[in-house]
Length: 386
Image 1 (cartoon, one colour):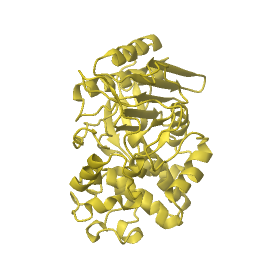
Image 2 (cartoon, rainbow, N blue to C red):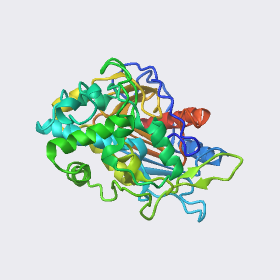
Image 3 (cartoon, one colour):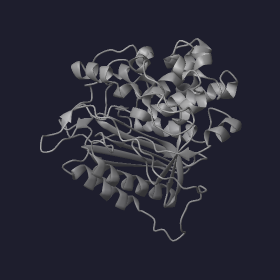
Image 4 (tube, helix red, strand yellow):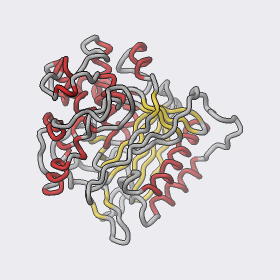
């Protein structure tokens, strides 16, 4: 996703070393000290008090028995009101899990195959890309060049951040570029992958991606406040996202950028409540089938962007986060003004949604990212051990 409004620097996508483990509550030692809700709350409070920290944070921890909501800071610096779980927010690259959910549902139905190629489903895309498969797109092993780093795309965004893009033609910005490597030979996170995934879903169904989202994902999971807009406006109420660059005061950038420029790769608007519902259905494979889930969980070394808690591995539109307290599956995301993590145990019984109102990644705030990943790991420990 765009790493910053100021300069649009590409994100460092180097993979985090991965290690295998089962998802038992303790992946290292049964003596790992639990993290209390009070301790996690103190860490969130300290995070939002930092001069370079996000103005607001909201964390939802849910299991079969209860839901706990932790809040810190404010949803809106102009009013000071606290964050709420029904506040809208830009979910950034966690939207890639939604396009994955659509595609994998169609695989379960037999309308798509993981070995379907760009050449077979999207023959108008560059011939050099034709051998790339749906599996490789979903796992970021396709080699497709990332359109969000293309000079022309960056120029247009900088000229008019609210510019309306033709979402279905975003890949034209890199249409003249070759693949970065032979498909399937390595991992490289690319926003282009999920644009192609959505286009494949449209090609086999003849229906708009937005309609497929509503039918396949939103309605079955009860997502009442989730949408894929084309413009820059946010529905009320919402978590205001900020550009934080001390010593300047935080700047509200919630409605600076048009969602049309990220579409299936990161344009969805949702709420912490809806994202909790989503990950509790998505992680265990409620929308697909046991056979598809097995394919989805064939892990390769690779980190989400930004990297999530613990050691990261990449599956098909999902990541495995191996923490000191256990394994959760999910996705992270970052967008100007927002940083997100949604994750759940493989059976979906334990889940967390972790939302911040400042973009934090290895390019714009590397030291802060390390702190955030540490707090996210504490959140996993709180979830699994209390």
